[in-house]
Image (cartoon, rainbow, N blue to C red):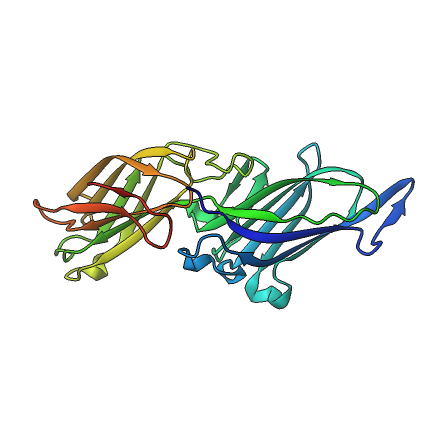
Length: 281
């Protein structure tokens, strides 16, 4: 079951009479305050407060899906103002507000209400709210919105030692996407994802752990996952295939066990920091 993290988003129109007239049109100011989370799932320690997010990216669109204002906030520069958003000079009408909170050191580019992505094909832990807002006159409107995690996560834990000659680990997903559709809350593209990790420094060490985020294409996406150990020339030395893995938003699935060698064996479980599931390798 999806466990939302609740964020109090208070939108105040024309505070307190922060309005002016431009010709015959009344202009209003929309203030959005992102206050600390109200938790519904104590098993997710990284989302206990606003400190889980390093950046907030927000775009306000008019009824024609044209961007009216963009706000990019970084905790490191905003200080106590982090999470306080203001959209001044709005005429009466209907707007769509897209807010993304994430822990990336870069901004997440919101291209449109149906497309957003991280830089360099990366996918960080992120939370989303897309909300339709009606602005009218000098009225005051308070909103309490839920920001939900929109990524799924897959973690590999190799309990056996990384053998000599292995320098990379590759994880290949048959389904999922690298871009987000803020309107549907699922992936904006499909075709899966391939991520390669450099692990040469871990030769001889056990408990190698790598984690990969993905935007699922639906609330009940199933994917085939290949885990490959490679040498410097990217020749596959060891490989495992999981033919049918359920990857859902707000779920983290972990494959744990011996990864290297002909007798390798892994068990897949749901990470205890997120929601719980168990499937057999």
